[in-house]
Image (cartoon, rainbow, N blue to C red; front, side):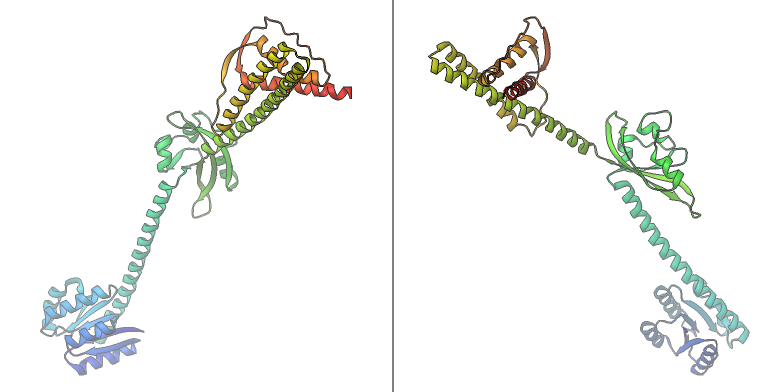
Length: 395
């Protein structure tokens, strides 16, 4: 039950009021003076106060203010002699809910108590709503902070694909204009994008995911992974769609680099294989030259081995620096020299395997641009495979 403290200098009158209030489902207590009342208030604060200033008006007003600060929903009734009512009203102003002349009439007290209960219930509801509003305001601030600080691009779009809200990261890269079409901002188009995830979410109410390339206001392109989610009203109808895009440009660049790395490693492996073939051929020429005491063949073999050693050194240096994204070393080449050099590198191996390799290379094939190392490696590998095929056919 609700509690009420009666502060009255007449103990018998206070007890009579307490008995009446107990029948109205209150838990009444009485205090004959302000000092006793202060002790009771600090020990067990009541829900209501009924006070008689009884000549100590200022101290009573101070006591009531302290009670209301400690118990914001608490209500105060003033019951005093009729000649004191005007002074009490001027002193308490709005600090008291009702003013009753003593002796208090039962109907007047019944109405005052009823109003006090209603006022306390309303005040409690207001305080509860204020607390909830404060919590909502805090949650709103947290949401706003999350919305703006999350490391991705966020837009909110209506059914016409017009942007109604954006976060800070989006503003920095794509601008802060509201009401423009998303496809104008993202893709610089004049019509909606095909296979639009926002349209799909409006259609079926589900989340959708796509990967796209978008263009920022400075012209820079980004690879983004995009998710969409519906925003619904109180009736469950989709009113807007939130689109969240994560920048995966660096990831795609890394994938491209790894793909290029694989191709380069494949090319290098063929190049190394070709150089080893040429090295084997040079050794064969050197051995046969020494066996025949053929100085010309020995000199040719020496030059060939020196050339191959230089190529191997260059290839090893490229491999050592292979973690870096190596650009093609495009140079102007003589086509006849390139093909003749590749045939010359493979010729010793062909001879060793008893395969006749004849290179009929015209001298006027012209010039072209390419990476000499990669192209030579590819040609040597191709000719080597042909020689090995011929050798197997002879077995």
